[in-house]
Amino acid sequence: MNELTTVIQYPITIFSLPHVIFMLVLFPLTPIVGRFLAKKYGFSKKVIWVYAVIGLICEIERMLFFLEETTGGGYRLPPNHLPLNTCPLMVIFMFILALSEFPHKKRNMIAYMYPMLVGGGFIGFLIPSAAVDYHGLIEVATYRYFFFHAMTISFGFYVFMSKPFEFTMRDYGMGLFLSGFMLLVGVWLNAFFGWDPEVNQMFVVRPPLPGLPLLNMRFGWPGYILNMMGIGLFLISLCYLPVIITCISTFIKKLTGKAV
Image 1 (cartoon, rainbow, N blue to C red):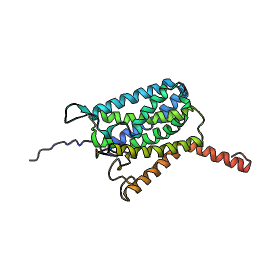
Image 2: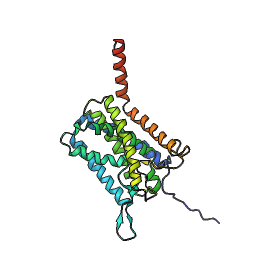
Image 3: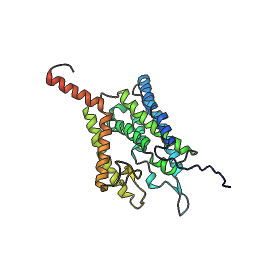
Image 4: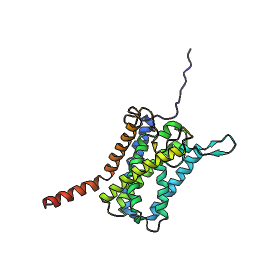
């Protein structure tokens, strides 16, 4: 007689029921929270501080989760888990804004942060590489991962809706430029930590997960990077779509002399 056993498989897998539930519960709340804070407080340093502190707490938990013992004794954070990918890097930028006397004057930084917070956080939700690779449903780190990315998306919406300045096509161009520059920085970072084969800062070495439809090595590394750049261009443009539409509308109005 066979003994029936219940097998619980960890970690969670992409688009599994737990993954879909996390997305359905948390992602719709991000614009709601961002809009509420923007309407109630405007572009406020107090709100930025709250987001920055929450982000720091999440980063500390992540650091403690991934600490590993060294051969010589003691513990270290592996180079592939340094806060040098897009979303963890945003926490550092949050503190720069919070510590700035006039954060609204950090225009170029905000122009870059806004699409990275929203688009990068969404990609983190969609392709939870760290959660898929290491976390299980019984671990706090799983909930921290999805909460952290929800928080980054919410902050991105908050920044845009609170209007620290009037976003223009200049900000759209700056967002594209700085995103491209950070891709180059990612290549340098991976070269610096190249002694560790698992390092993949900014995901410029290899895809975050195997078997993804666009982010794969089917056409080699150049094809992978071009696809990544294309996805980045699409997401940044989507974030700045209201600005692009306004610019086109203004251009047509000037061209035709009529209100559009």
